[in-house]
Length: 333
Image (cartoon, rainbow, N blue to C red):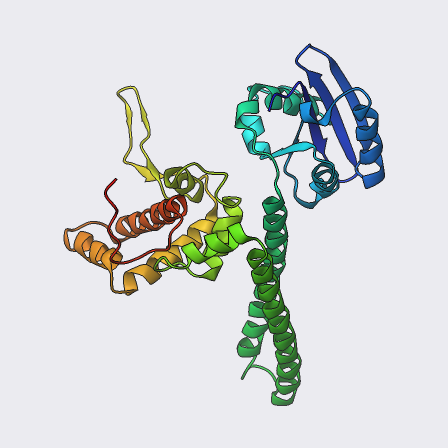
């Protein structure tokens, strides 16, 4: 698709700063309210002079503040690219000044310069965003439940017996209530994923891999945006913080290969648990772990290699659209 008009939008809670740039050098700036009605009016005015098929809208992904824009664009067939703010900043060079208007101009320039890398929003993205919101709420309830559970145990034997019994009774009711909410959200997350044939198939493939459970599978689908965001297992390993890198400069700076601190720590923790689970099961990953440790390798280094193997295995299976088989023999082409 050949885009001729690029619209950069800086999204905030109350307003949208908009910069419109064309291939012919036109530049226009607008500021509107971040509301359905204002967004509709702006695009209806724009429609009088431009065809939707020639327009690319690019905005920073700011969570639920982007929803009014997303709903309008997807409902009206407008190409929408939601990009990470960090990615835009890294590719925009040195920035000596910052305000919302300048940010919208940088986003428009970014969209025009890197249009070949544009990843447009799809209906599956809507499902993933919903699952992400439900998962975030679920995690909040899990943290709260753990807090109440710990109080039940911590106060036992340290305060008056009658006071403790009354307190424990109230806390247990809270725990039971939160457990019901967590179960309900688990059900809704599963329904959302199963409602998309593509995402349901991806989850089915992921949970077939040893060590990968529902939580790891769901979070991986969210992070990879249905396996469209990362081109390979190596790229995703970098995002998770599993891939090691060397740091060298001239002849004076030499360091051993190590993982970067710039990573998705929550995903790293999940894949750590997946690796621990995998090396407890009979199979090649446990054999690999035991063999390397017997050779004198550091246990955590080997465990990190197991995490990378799980990630690479996941991406290979998604690419080939098949579930993991222990005795799988690759066909000869």
